[in-house]
Amino acid sequence: MSLYLIAIMLILSLCVPARAQDEMSVEEDPIDKSVGACIDKDSAPNAIVACFSQGHRQWDAEVTKLYNELLGKLDNDKKETLKTAQAQWAQYRDSELRFIDALYAGEDHPAHAPLRADQRMQLIRSRALALHEYLASLEELAASENAEENDKDAAEDEPKEVK
Image (cartoon, rainbow, N blue to C red):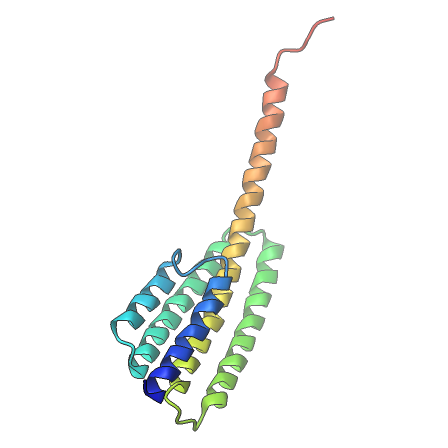
C-alpha cells in the first residue's frame, strides 16, 4: 500500500471518531451523510477536500438557520445575549480558521489538505450542533411547562369531595 493511501486512510480514521462523539451521529445527520457519501464516491485528496468544503458550506447555512430560529424563540434580553455570543463566536471562528490555514501553509504532504478541510468543517459543525442543542432545550422546557399547566388545569377541573 502506498504512503499516499495510508495517509488518506489515517485522515479518514481521525475524522470519523470525532463525529461519532457528537450527539448527532453520522447516521442521523443529513449533512454528515452527504459528506460521507461524497467521500465514498471519490477518495482522491482533491475530491475529499471538495466534499469537506461542501459540508462546510452546508454547516454554515445550518448555523445561520438555527441562529435565526433560536432568535425567534427568545425574549429581548436573551436575544441580545445570543447576538453577543454569536458575534464573539464569529471572531473565534475567524481566528481558528486563520490558525488552521497557517498550520498547514506550505505543507506538501497529501494528507494535509483533506485534514485542513475537515478541521475547518468541524469547527462550523460544532457551532451548529450547539445551536441545535439550545433549541432542543427550549423545546423541552416549553413541553415541560405545558405539561405542568395541563396537570394543574386537570386538577382544577376534578370535582371536589363534599364533606
